[in-house]
Length: 108
Image (tube, rainbow, N blue to C red; front, side, top):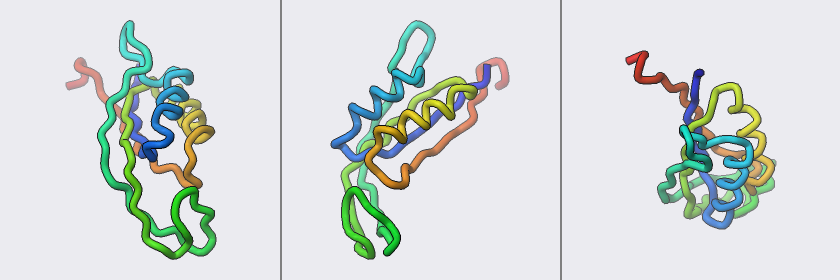
């Protein structure tokens, strides 16, 4: 079964909601464990343009937000539904996501 790793960047106010949505959508399952993820904190920086409707900050103004990078694995065939679940609870107009295709030990 092909797996992907997804990393999503979330303001600290919404990390528990996003992690919950990931787990409910069956992201983060590893063997007999569910809701598995790893998080690291950092600073997200952005400048919304005049067409944006930012959750945080103002148009045409640089913004810095303390965020968590939440990363987890899931089967490739569930990735779209997991991403959809994330977007339903994530506060940002544009959700920053990275998706990586993984190989298993037998493929090394």
